Length: 145
Image (cartoon, rainbow, N blue to C red; front, side):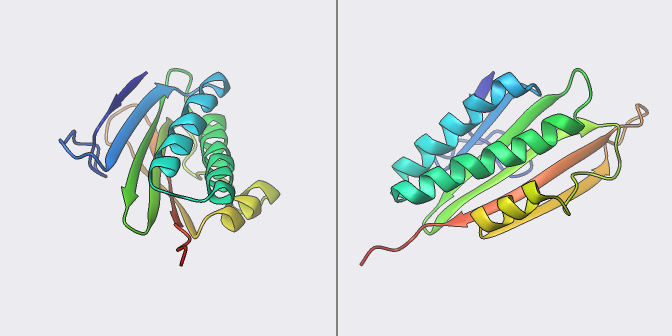
């Protein structure tokens, strides 16, 4: 597992608002991602319910991607805290060009937990016949007055 600041494109940078976590694309590693998003959301002053929503949403995103991942793939999550919320870009390599199924109950739950969620698939750009499958998620922070 590696954790380091990163840009949305995956280039390491020295920025305290961005964190990249890379683990083996295996179900046993999902707790790592839940812990990271919980800690980041807590530090960004999210309320308790929003932190729980984010943990569940990240678990759904990562579970969806792990099911699509090639045998030796890494699950890469890029978290970014912003003044008004938190965003996540998660990705794996896959042999499946169709990406995550968006017509499932799981996807509906995910869509309800986040302000926005969007899948994307692109060629890995090599001769392996693999694809980079991504899910981008964003959740705003509730403003307390």
